[in-house]
Length: 295
Image (tube, rainbow, N blue to C red):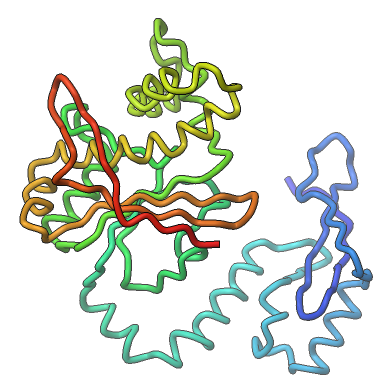
């Protein structure tokens, strides 16, 4: 079904933001109405004419990739097409030799495990380029222990470590993580109710450690604590895979944690100190080193 919409462009400097509202109030808004200080609205038609006048409308300007219109409706795949063609013209063709070499093989230095949250794109935040990182994203950026059985996460880990022989594994968490909130809301005496709960249950040890350390804090503060605690627990869980532990022991592989904070656009990075960690059935504890705070 196609819903009629009305739209306007908000322009500030070289940035164009399109606001889209459904004309029928029964349906949810496709995008939130965007209010930007110092912006002015103009029609798509007038902007399109201006774009053609200034750039020939041939994918030359960065503004073109921010809008696409067909028959008065916003076409999201049209937008995607413009972005792809912009990538092809501005990156692929200009770095043709590099991209053709990537077509033959990959030699990434990093394996990244990040949250599936749409706001957390490691390539966008940390500037990873094609060929630099082998990546998997899942709910709450969790790494299950090996004994928990096969999963998409550990299958990707096996390929990255044993075949690609990456030199670094980086687990990236973030603030306001809904997956961690779901984990903290789970009752210890109940079975997982759905796929989400079944997955975040992999973070149960981090949840128990959080509750023991933060019983005096509010639920929101406990979630913030668990967001980092779950990262460190995932770093320990990585050592339950013998082919990971073996390469870490030989200093061929390093394990790192990272935390992206939306509220102030900061990033914390640290490295697991393997020699100081205690990983046994009875007890597991960790020590981190090389802490850095980027802001």
